[in-house]
Amino acid sequence: MAQECILVIGGGISGLTVAVEAAEAGYDVCVVEKNPYLGGRVAQLNKYFPKLCPPLCGLEINYRRIKENPRVRFYTLAEVEKISAKGGSFDVSIKVNPRYVNDRCVACDACAQACPAEKPDDFNFGMSRTKAAYLPFDQAFPQQYVIDSKACKGDCGKKCQEACKYGAVDLGMKGETVNVSASAIVMATGWNPYEIARADNLGFGKVKNVINNMMMERLAAPNGPTGGKILRPSDGKEAKKVAFVQCAGSRDENHLPYCSYICCMASLKQTTYLKEQYPDATADIFYIDIRTPGKYEKFYWKVRDMEGVKLTKGKVARVEQAAGGDVKVVLEDILSGKKVEQTFDMVVLASGMEPSTRTKPVQLGITYTDEGLIVPSSLKPGIYAVGSAKSPVDVAKSMQDATGVALKSIQSVLAGGAK
Image (cartoon, rainbow, N blue to C red; front, side, top):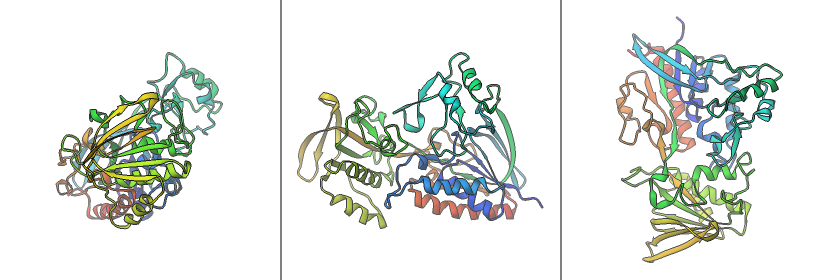
C-alpha cells in the first residue's frame, strides 16, 4: 500500500524538524511555506541563547537534509487554500504563487543588478531596501531569486529578464494549485512579533530609534542592514547607551495577557551583542520580572554581573523623543518608589510572540484562544500542532516538540489517518 504524505503547514524550525525526521524515517512529507524561503524566524536571528552560536549553521544542515531527501516536497510562496477529510485521509489544495524566477536560477545576482525598482527589505523589517528582484538572504533555501511584482513599475521586469543569461526570469509565470492527499497534518504556523505600535505609550513607529527585539537581531547580524554594526536607524550613530524594555505587549490584558517566554532571554542575549561590540557601552534593562527558566538561570547571572549592565524593576510608563534623536524613557522604579527619567541612544522593545494564527487561522474545526493559540485538545485525529502555534516557546523546545510530533504523524499514517 502506497504511503500518503504528512502535510506540514509552515517551514520554520518546527516544520523543518518534523519534515526531516519523518522523511528520514521513510515517510513522504509535503511542506507549505508562505515565504519565498524556508527557515522562518530562526533565519532572522543573529545568535541562539545561551550558547551564542549562529543559527545558520543548524539551518544549513537541515537544508542539506531536505535537498538530499527525495521524500520531502516543499512549496514556497504557498498557502493552503482548502482541506477536507475524506475517509482516512485529507484532500488538500495548495495555492502556489508565482516566483517569476524558475529552477534555472544560479543566484548570480545579475537580475538584481539590472533591476531598477526597489522595495523595503522585509527580511530586515524595513530597516534597509532591496531590489524588486532579490534573494531573501545570503544562505536562503531554495537558493533562488524572486521578483516582487508589486514593487515593479511598468515593464521594468524586462531589464531583469534581459540581464539573465540562463533564461531563469519568467515574467509570464502563473500561480498554480497543487492537490495532495495527506494522512496527517502538522500545524507549524509559527509566530510574528506583536505589533507593539498598538501600545501608544511605547513610541514604536512614532519615536525615532525605538525598535523591537527582532529588529535588534537584524542590526547585530553580519548579513543585516548595517553589516552587524549596532547603529541607530535614524542617523547611523553608534548605539552605546541602550535601554531594553521588557514585557512590551506581553502580560498585559490590553495586548497579550501571557508571558511570551523568550523575551527576557532575548534581551539578555542582545545585551551581550552590545557589550561585545562596544565594551564601554551601557545597557539598562527595565523589567516587571526577569524570567529565565531552568538551565538559563546561569546565563542571567552572567549578563547581570557584566560591567555597565543595570537591571531596574519597574513598568515603563512612556517613551518619548529627546533632542538629537535620543530617546527618553519614563518609569517608576518599584524598589525605590521613585520616578525615573533617563535618556538613551536607542530603545529596544521586547515585543511578545503572537501566533500567526491570530490573524490568519487555519479552518480545520480547530479551537483557538482569544490570542490565536491552538487548543491542542480540540485537534481532530490526524491533526497536530507544534511549537509556538500552541504556546510561546524557544527554539530548543520547538525542536523537541517537533520530534515528538513527527512520530505521532507517522503513527497516523500507519493507522490510516483521519478516521
